[in-house]
Length: 105
Image: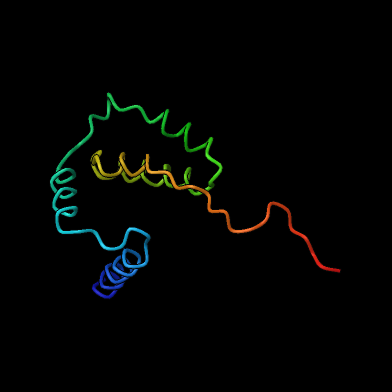
């Protein structure tokens, strides 16, 4: 378990360092910590339907997967606001190639 946790945090640091935004500043971390420290969302008044609908309509296939995982985690861990906010954080499909594949003859 200890090894898995060490690998988890090491991977997180690597991903942050490789991201376009780079490492967050101490102020950003403090703000996020305060905003999401113990905020719970009222499950009876929270509507997942618009988030799920938007995830389904997105071109990027990973967005609906993000919504699904965040919703499961939100239910499992006491309706923490961080999961419902993360579910709304959609990514854009990167333009990594031509629309049609062509082969040289």
